[in-house]
Length: 504
Image (cartoon, rainbow, N blue to C red; front, side, top):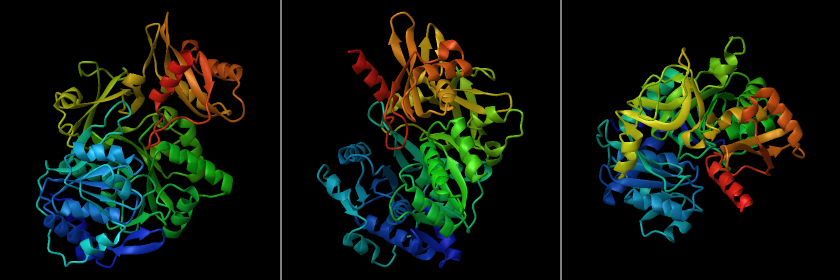
């Protein structure tokens, strides 16, 4: 089924319902949203775009993003979302690899991209866009099958060139319906606020809010500004947001500094990286029971597991701390298992690689059969993440398999050490990596962002009080800020490079 049909169905019964906002200003109703999407589809047809053709979206968070996205889908095309924070050359590489036929851009990105690609592009903030949406609609959503591609999503590529994850209509249908079953309810009275890049999880969550006829709000700043978010939440009310853990942490800090209560925030879904227990406890204490955690990957978008609102907020259950340290239970559309190196299931409580299978799992990577064969094994998605499953089905992440530290033949999981260090009042952020050691293979070192000066003795004593002696860092490196990619994930590869440089 064509995803644009969900938009059409709302427009059929709620033409005048406010749909898209720039800040506090309504720019589109559901009627005009759908009509303009059809006009985009008709225009793409005149440009030779056929069902299955790839169309790039290299755009900032602007109202036209949603119109272009649904226009591509209505035409039967495949959206190739590209993070606006990428360099134009990186965007051009993605477009070339995807064999894209066209690309929509926005102000500030168009000129840079045009310098490094010969692909036809159109700036949705220019007068040319008005010509695209001016003709009368001549198109209806093209019929599409469940296994047809709808999104070609490129991984962040922190360890090499990104890979194109082939995301089908079936996968996004499963994701959307699983959201209602396992994550949150949505009604026409709700508001989706897009403060994280729409090229990723924050943007693909538009589907559930379109399906229910909710409002879609783009901050006037175009990005993440805490004061603006709090003001928009108060104005629009019943606000849903997707946030990376670093965004949640920052919102909590600013709210406590400024006296903001989070009025108008109904649900914050967090994911995309490790949320440390100390940080989410502080966030719930301040904002209340508004948080839900999801765990997913591009290869199984947003729907491997979920930690419910009640589990995130509960402090009465005997296992509440262990549950809060987990990423929840399997979402309805997937099976979960922990496997060994050959993908054989392991018993509950055993550390191994997290595996998932079901309708939300990708068929493979774009034009990359070798990587596909390594990642999809006997129908299971091998996530590359290490974890455990409890007897009652809670999934706890340990680390990426490549981040595991093996010291003297013993496995040490950096996240456990990071969780311990974050309980110290002097520690703002921390990242733990392995350092080559001639006798032990590796030892543990910590890069720490501190309040005040780093005191190694205090941190060492704190670790000895929290975790086993062999797990404590053998060295601490004070750092002004941790290196992160465009999605807020700490780049441990960069920290390892710093270690190599310091040892030269």
